[in-house]
Image 1: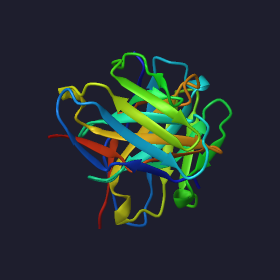
Image 2 (image 1 turned 90 degrees about the horizontal axis):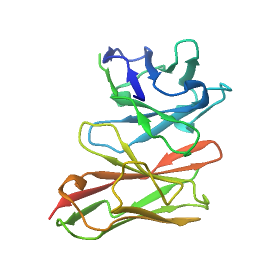
Image 3 (image 1 turned 180 degrees about the vertical axis):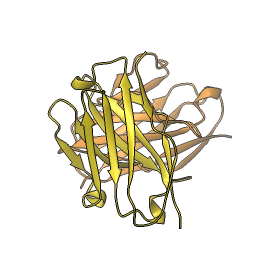
Length: 119
Length: 107
């Protein structure tokens, strides 16, 4: 079945970086776009950015422009989101989600990765 | 950046009620809008795409309408499984933005 499996929880110190992975299966990864979204406890969904897998083109929310990099490895059908200069406010669950380019919406979601930033 | 304003923030309703949630965009987004349902501790689930297209497997009591700047999600007869938080998400100029969410609670 179509699924996205994300890497496990992370605990990071302020000022460091985190890289979360998202492995796709059951659909054509190269014909998709992947977004990254985060959600702090009890808060709204917040869009971070996305990558069109086939072209590698990316776009990021202005808030994260200077600190985030989204990449993909087509040989392993895996997308990555790296966030640098971490601060306590980055503590959240990070989700990846796939748009198979037939809906212009994200119908396949990962299970989420908890990232905790604490000294 | 386009801002999305969802209303209401919280909605109290009973099983069987007709429920409407509104999402307004700060500028026209044509029909580039999706609706998601999220339950506590779970990833969001796609309900509606391109403003009014029902995702496969989603019950027909869910419907979406609108274009331009005003959009609605309607649940025709609220069921126990529908108590959750609902988000709209818009697409414009290679960026996506979520509304702030509407929590549907049991009255």
